[in-house]
Image (cartoon, rainbow, N blue to C red; front, side, top):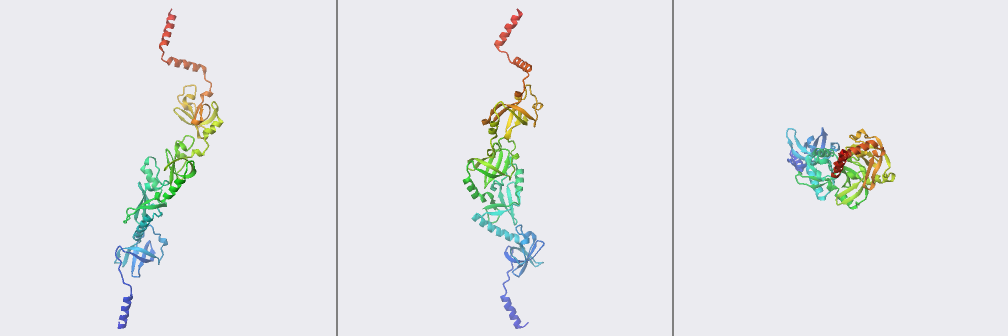
Length: 396
């Protein structure tokens, strides 16, 4: 090699960029060379070649959107002397970036969208590039809160499992520098809308809300972050034993606001319908005959299914002139019968019906029964004295 060549080599060496060997934990940039079998080959500053294996790609990266020549940030995990490669992680570089962003979101109260990846009995977990963060049950909006009878833990978990994978708009309400205590709140994300909706809501408003929960004592419905209760007595004018027969979770329903006490909102569905008692009072009066099917039978009587869901009672004593041991010997569920109205108080929602009032009472049998009953009654002192006088007179 001539002196001229040596001088040229020295000039090129001095002009070339300094080679800095990346250390473990460094976050560096590089360009994608190739993607194969979910592994990414990376060119680092035209000085080193690095490899991101599939498990270090992370769950927030869509490989279909990555192309050769594209810049990415990766963390150095080590090197492979045998292969002459840097071992890199796209996932861990993103974790640092996400933690930085979450701190900004916490400070600015910005609303972001996350998707829960799993659930436990305390809430929903959000896995972002291997870091698991949390939406507690207490921070869910009424639409997603598990309204479960008796707080059954199995049913609560089943409800939360059904929410996995759905998008949630949340705010970051707690963050630490290590990313171990990141807490999201769905309630906090709708607080402004909720306060605005509550400020404009008035008693007797009619609005369309969504069913958010069904329990034995009523229906929970939600709108703009507000939640109200349609008590079982306000679902229908008729007798309601199972609210689930009237609605399903997620179903839209029109309700009337009948009570506002701070956050306690009372609602009604039945008051959007005509009062069937008023309708019945226009058609019938005391002593009229009414025809309707038998809807159910209890030990103290039978119920007739009247208009508008009203249940009219035929008391056990009004079934027959004879002693009734089993009501089903006289009438059956589904059978259409005629009954006489013997008590009618629409304003008190009462109606009493009678079958035997439409039947002619058998005279002899009734007389015998009266005599038997009178014999069963304990005799008074005056009656006993009178009976003694009669007996003495007979003896004479």
